Length: 239
Ligand SMILES: Nc1ncnc2c1ncn2[C@@H]1O[C@H](COP(=O)(O)OP(=O)(O)OP(=O)(O)O)[C@@H](O)[C@H]1O
Ligand SMILES: [Mg+2]
Image 1 (tube, rainbow, N blue to C red):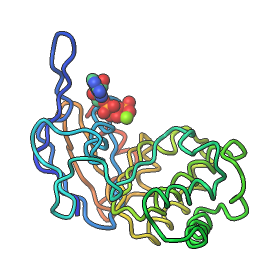
Image 2 (cartoon, protein in one colour):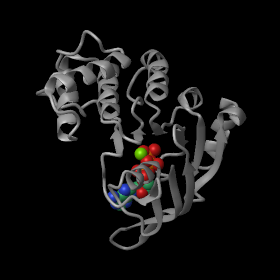
Image 3 (cartoon, rainbow, N blue to C red):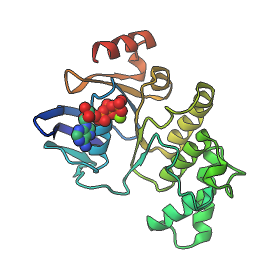
Image 4 (tube, helix red, strand yellow):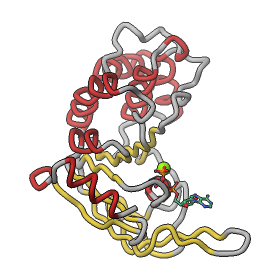
């Protein structure tokens, strides 16, 4: 379980301090697919960086299974918006086996390859194991990045607008794959998006972040998820 207690984060510029997150609280349970929406600049990426241990709050605490998050670890992986996350000099399979080796998973290359193939199959990339990243479409690169992150068996996967550079048809084709991968791996996922349809399709929960509140203004579970129009309106009100 991920517990965020009263965290605040400010950035100091040349003349003034700008508080981005102010006493934010959030609990994300194991296996949740937690989607965060909010207007540009409200602090979504800042929040993900804090959860990933890439940044530290000025006050408050972040706990994963009761242990404070103080630095990046292999328990928490991140997938970004950029299509350039894969190592260009490795094949798709090589990207996964290299990451596994670095993470100390499995003793032999054969074991790593077998595991990598199963994650690539989940991501719909069977047959592309030997392709290089430049030979893949944007959607395929993102699926490969997702497979690589999940193959390291993190407890939590953070995704910062991973699909926002893809066209609508590609995104729609990707959603069932992402949902199935989340279910099969049981990984807890936090995903940031500006796409309300994406949030409603993927999320077990949706959190709305607010610029005025400098925190989370509402959390909805799947059963109580508002219509897309209502969510759009909330986003405008929270801008
Ligand atoms: N390292 C930093 N130094 C100074 N200011 C920063 C830093 N990182 C973020 N900020 C500021 O914090 C605010 C929130 O930024 P953040 O990137 O978290 O927003 P966001 O919600 O992810 O926006 P977007 O939807 O556009 O990606 C912005 O005003 C930004 O300029
Ligand atoms: Mg951002």
